[in-house]
Image 1 (cartoon, one colour):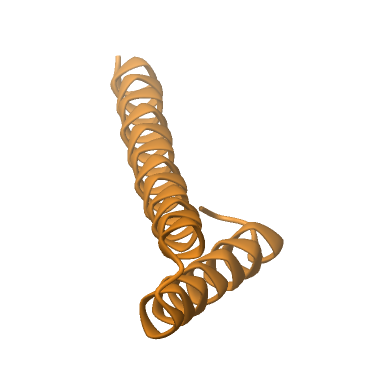
Image 2: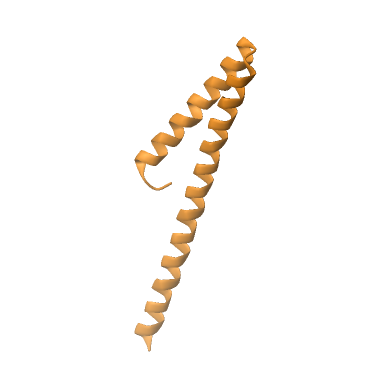
Length: 74
């Protein structure tokens, strides 16, 4: 994720999800534990998607710059 707001939201979801999971384990509340696992996993998926998006954008920018440079050299 490139924006600070997205990163902050993701970190918040991860922390809250992990806290819910632990609270569920301690209290024996399987539903709360599951909700925590889901929230934490969702945060991981968003982070990976953001990293992939950033990687794709970087590669595209590099290719465009390379083609511009090749055209200018001709």
